[in-house]
Length: 570
Image (cartoon, rainbow, N blue to C red; front, side, top):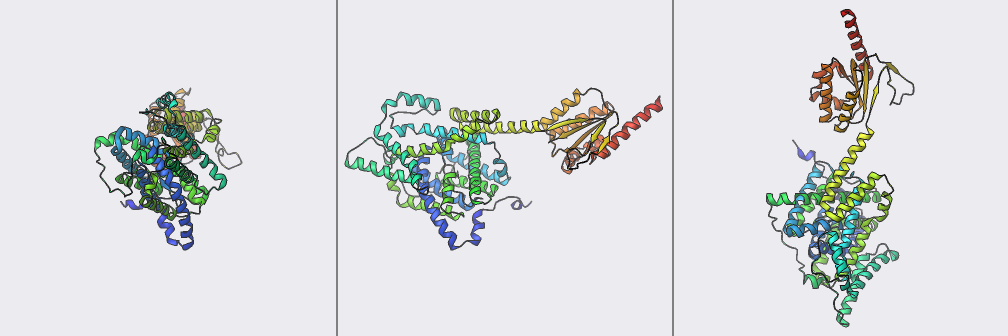
């Protein structure tokens, strides 16, 4: 088998580069430089909030961002560390250390590649919106709760990992607030919030970091102000050398322990990257190659752990910054990675002077933007089922764990889908007459007379396990036993193993009672499944009809023959 012909892996970079020109290069250079500058403070902040160093955040943005642009299925997607991963990464580090994080990220990359290879990119997009909003809002609140110590400069020896425990400790230690630290964080938030009023193209986070870093440096150097912690105070002098690749140390015990976390990283990364790609398609008019995007994201997550990096996915804010600044091909994403690399190699010592409160302010704004409170307010006016899913996913994310929230959220999505399909699938019963024009575009009635002793059951929807049981119950609850049962299946797009089993049971029980079963309107796809299950051997090839007219004629003749035999026997 030629597997390469089956796999949908066509990176947009190689498509766009075929007709590349100087004009596109100019636009991509401008967009890439701007996005690189915007990505700098976010990469640092996400790295620190995730429990690693600023260096790791930048390495992730450089290597992961390059691979996502070079191998992804979207022309303008910008990849890197994002706020969505902060909580899951932090928890993995707390429980399994940096080695465990590397293994989980690698496994998540493999899962993403598998999802892309089996062409599940389109399916991922259809996860119900309330679930996405629920855990995104939950992540936002959790991110905010992790920044309280740095934002207010609280003096706390150890902060609990659980949400409720955190806030209990915060309240008890709120009297240790550092006014100077809080003012740095507050002014950071104000600068970021006001920058778009001046120009939406200006990177508010970077401007806030530059301004507040200069202010804090002057306060410390010239006025002797102390107590405002900087990156250098916490992490010391940081290296600006690209780390050499290292081994991960995979073993089955580690794989088993980290598989749930890896699955969470993969699903969350797939959702966020494809959501970002969908938003980008709406802004540019392009079409994302969803499965290629998943494979590209997977490769990025397979590679970055070898350099000490954290999980990578598509970043909506950076992607939209790329679009608004003229980026239209993956070259802009490559330029963004190169800009970050140059900053890492030559300007890394300056990062030491950035106040921790300033980064906390940046993340507070990120959390606010992620919260989507307006969207939440709108969903709360929707049907109760949507509200229940939203609230459940939100609470699971905040109170328990993002892994649990993703798993329960996906389970809820499946259950909701099955319920709605079951509700929309109808089973109709006909006797005496049936209008075969019903459900078609034909305007005049075309009525078939059905002999006494013939009942017609029409299934309108997929014949899967939910409907199979419902159909089985209906058959058992019918009163008088007919001579012939016609199962009309013109609107049955597929039938699963449970449907096959129930159909076999119905045929066997009907035959034992002397009742014929005739199948009508069987589509070619369903007929293939029935043939593979040897249904035709149970009822006879002539009892599987492609149209209701043939089925009714056959059923009427069977009843007539039965009545004729009875008359002779009398």
